[in-house]
Length: 178
Image 1 (cartoon, helix red, strand yellow):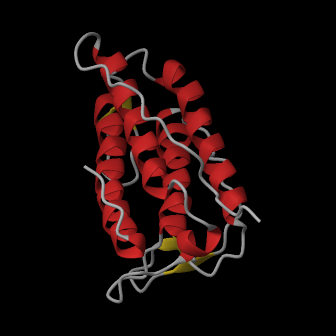
Image 2 (tube, rainbow, N blue to C red):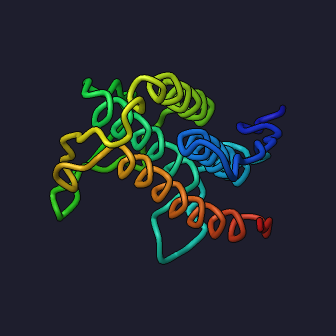
């Protein structure tokens, strides 16, 4: 039985010069694909594996988190609409933050499909919310910020979590990225 969740990922070429929004959009897609590339070829069991004794992070947990990043920042902050989150199990940390529970039983294929939907929803919202990059938006984490800051922050989230994914993948099966 073939239980691979994420199939072959081809990362897109990045736009490295030109209109700022094209550069940002292409870099977001590049980071989205890079995260999936780190998950490529793994089974549900491997995606749920906690390979580092010092961390509760899993690749599947990062995938759940990144769908939340997409929806919170694009739908919630930039579009000003209530995000449509998938009902994953959550818990409240000692600091009072809500976090996705690693014990969530949602099948990895469903999490993957939900993550892809979240990315597509963000692409659709992108054109509507970036017409004025200097537009100020209320931001629950940072106060009032402009659209450019929010887009940069989403790229920052991906950069951090792709680094986590790289370490997790190497610890799972020795596969290393660039």
